[in-house]
Length: 203
Image (tube, rainbow, N blue to C red; front, side, top):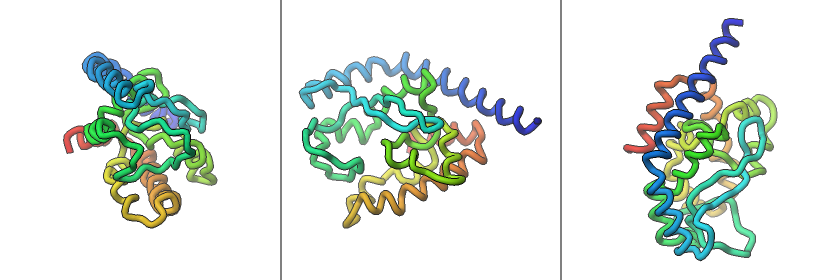
């Protein structure tokens, strides 16, 4: 019973931290988000917000919000993005490099669909296909950053060096991310969350 109480306390602390930080984050950065949306709308000739279904906590789908960084295309595309992807606009590359494209996700965090730290939210076909103990990772809210995100912060360059990026992502990167995120879940602390956020912003 004490263990359950401790876990419940951790969940409440993490959620309170996420809510407060995302609330003030939106207050501070809303003008950047608005400007980026206008520029992305002009640059891509479409809505500057990129909205897509992703797998969230407990395997439930939600709509993630980002600044659009790619040109709209009618051709079926890959879910894997590598460095030099021709779909990425020059302005989009700047947004991705500076992480400005991630700022609208503060709203996802504020309303409880995401956390600041956790597994990156995947498109259907990855996290929702997990089996056995690996499904434990679905108990976590997906995050803007985290230990797996930091390890693979150069993922686009890594994928660009592979002859079959999708296969490498499916067989090497994704399983490793699951392992890292399970370890994060089992050894969570607020201090570590703050450290991951610091590393994301300043390193």
